[in-house]
Amino acid sequence: MQDYDEVTAFLGEWGLFQRLIFFLLSASIIPNGFNGMSVVFLAGTPEHHCRVPDTANLSSVWRNHSLPLQLQDGREVPHRCRRYRLATIVNFSALGLEPGRDVDLEQLEQEGCLDGWEFNQDIYLSTIVTEWSLVCEDDWKTPLTTSLFFVGVLLGSFVSGQLSDRFGRKTILFATMAVQTGFSFLQIFSINWEMFTMLFVIVGMGQISNYVVAFILGTEILGKSVRILFSTLGVCTCFAVGYMLLPLFAYFIRDWRMLLLALTVPGVLCFPLWWFIPESPRWLISQRRFREAEDIIPKSCKNEQCSCPVVVFDPVEELSPVKQQKVFILDLFRTRNIGTITIMFLLLWMLTSVGYFALSLNTPNLHGDAYLNCFFSALIEVPAYITAWLLLRTLPRRYIISGVLFLGGGVLLLIQLVPADYNFLSIGLAMLGKFGITSAFSMLYVFTAELYPTLVRNMAVGVTSMASRVGSIIAPYFVYLGAYNRVLPYILMGSLTVLIGIITLLFPESFGMTLPETLEQMQKMKWFRYGKKTKDSMEKEENPKVLITSF
Image (cartoon, rainbow, N blue to C red; front, top):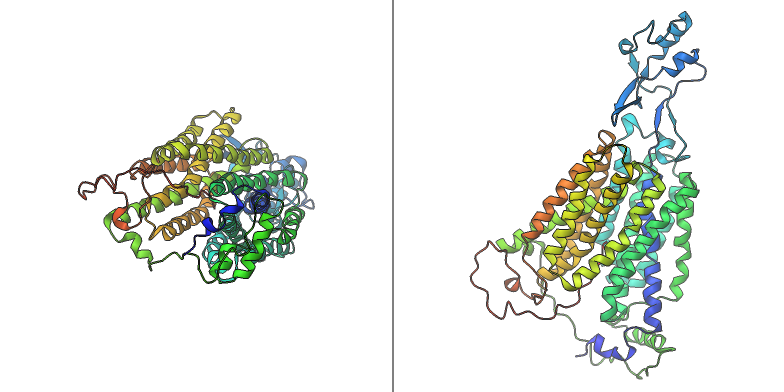
């Protein structure tokens, strides 16, 4: 039986071909960055108030007092969803009565925005909120739009792996790229909110599928020593680069339809990569398509100082298969130990995801420039990924994950203490919180993969990462709470982040331990009495390289 890595060892780890694949696949992730967060600007809600028709026979004084005041962040501002009954104030204006002097405004009857709204255009010329008036009674549609996008991400997570196993990595990579780009383009022609949202669900399915398949294809083509670099500094950093490009596009293009058109262009530019990115040789071999796999190898040897053998993959001598025992989701709860760890991981993944996406989506609500705040939110992810990579190389998992969660949650709780005049400090604390939560998020894949045994490892990572999708669906409603109280989302996110930081300390440690193969070899929760561990089970070996990514 042959081993794939041994058979292809003559190619080396970091040749010209591998570098090309590394950078092209990483670059294909960039559109995912701005598509994944585009709703920040597509569904931005500008300042607004009830429209008073120009045809209304009102004096300038009564027109200026046609809106009741409401308290917002400690100051009185015009009400967003109510106005004084127009017929009443028109009558008072005709009689020459003065508001406040002759008429007690607090006693006046109010009504809704029967003539629509006026939206401030200082930040956005148009968004789906201004186009379809998703405010006041319909303001629930805005967070639902984002949540349904992440429902699409959840659905895409289920099908992407199965489709790529069935039809091939390369085919599904470009097919899902076409879905993401094509349906984003169709959104431009949306005639109502319902049509936009339905298309957005499909965009979410394509977005995550493209991401996952590119990750799988890269890890199957690249060598062992390059995979961890690809999955952290390659994939995750390019996602952050795409995220950073989003506010740049949005700053110069303030109309949501034209912005969406501009965001589809980079996706179209990725299609020529079809002629440079090969199919996964591993997948071809699994389908017994040896000749096609053989044809890829000479491309790897081209311009490299390596000699390619005449026969690389011998159909007679098959590559060693991985024997897979059938497992079911209930196996993650088979014993009290593994069941407790699974429940704790589900909470950890879900609440970390809530913090990450809520902070990302909340940038327009921060004081200061919305575009600059979004850029900083994306920029902070790059040092967060690098920090996670460095910490994972040398330090125990539960302590570093707990530490960055305490950092992220602690600074978010401090925001409520910052005076309203110190806006720059609030923004700085929010970015520091994003740094801590992003670092923790990127480390969860490693920690989960190291704790679970080989028998259920893939299932465990899949199920727990599904919990993060649930967290992303919930996250927009944390942002929604900010409309009622500016600091309430930070109090909730900070409290939950500190809570999961405490929960992380209760996990068994995996750093320096041999990866478990069976449920019996799995590390035990400290308060469970399973008897004294054997010397062999506690023997420390070099920690195998585990892939890190943040879907």
